[in-house]
Amino acid sequence: MTIGRLHQRHRSGRVDSAACAAGLMVALAVVTVGGLSGCSGTQTTPTNAVKSWDSPTSWDSPTAWDSLTWSGTVTAASFSSDTEIASWRGGLVAATPVNRDRSTQIQIRVSADGIAWSDAAPDDPIFLDASPLSLVAGGSNLLLLGYRYAEGGSVAKLTAWSSTDGRSWQASDVLGLTDYVTLGDVVAGPGGFVATTHGGGPLWRSSDGFRWYEVSPERDTNTWRASVSWVAATVTGYVAGGDIEWARYTDQFPEVAAWSSADGQNWQRAAVDETPGSQATYGPGAAPVGSMGGGYVGQDGSIAIGYCCATVEDFAIKGGQTVAWTSTDGSTWHLGRDLPTEAGPDWRLEADGGRIVALNEITLQVHESFDGRAWREVSTTGFALTGLSSSARFVLMPGGLLVFDPGASGSTPARLWLATATSLSGGSGVAP
Image (cartoon, rainbow, N blue to C red; front, side, top):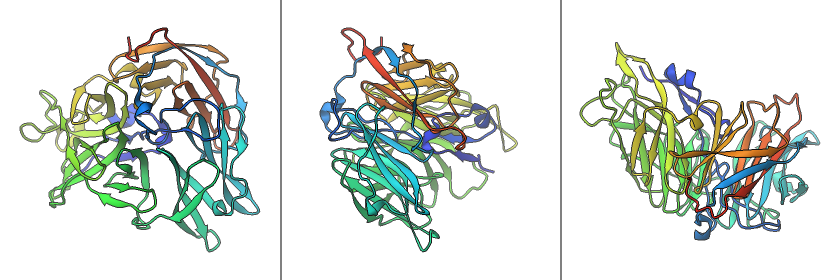
């Protein structure tokens, strides 16, 4: 018997505690964004569907936010639930599918403020019969992964589009991946692009986003079977988390596992705290039973969330819970048995390598942290967000955040809210 896995798309951004307690692991994706050439504004630090950093200056200490002022609701009728939005070079880039002439075409839109949007690559034939999957800000380039359809839409080919300015794009078939591999999280870091396999499995690495190579976090000894749920980039490399099982035993419960890498290709197993007194561990020093479901990287540390620390009785998991781990270097993780309030099931989390932001989808409170341990509430003014759907997500920027709600199953139009931040006077970038 094996713990079942429930993997959601990265845009869900939440842990379902009820599912975790039932023995299901919810995979939260790490989201990041970058910037846009031609848009006004200052250089941004990445944050939305992937992690990326344009230069070492992107890692300057962020200043703690004193308050956020919300704009009024902006209707974004041309955006859908499959729209991908990235912050890059002081602006925003969006890739959204639109229906034209009985076909689906990707439309690239850009904005300097998240309110006014314009077409960046109108009717470009390389986006004909295509739909987006992930938009990644990777250094000086934007990488868009998606599908192009052939033979009347019956054949989908994984495709990568690359741009240096958000307006002119080049397309290429993605090489190295079989038709049976679907990428999950995609991040850009110092060693190139790294991606998880949707549904758990090995990691993949690419220097350009076009040709990909499998990079297993564990040596293939026919003993261990690693399943990586999430990956994030840091200023010095990458961190990842998930679980690991004995391949020879089908009734073995998975153990929490995490890994780190400097180049995205060579990975080392991280140390994960054993839970004192847990009956769910196997052997001295074994990690707790469960899985790290999702991770968020702040400037002074990281937080990972997942299912953990159950008791195993008669080959059944009893009393499982959702918990958080923290790490300052990605190579050692410490368990905080009680999940922080700001990382609970009603909160959406995003991180940009500088700050971690939590948005409560019920109360609409905003909290920020720099290490995943100390949190402070950020006061909000202006127009209140109302009626967010379960598909709502947000893009984190140094100057605030953008909330994007595609609506409920197309019954309501997509909407946008922009929150502009006022920094604490003399803020040091360390959460008080």
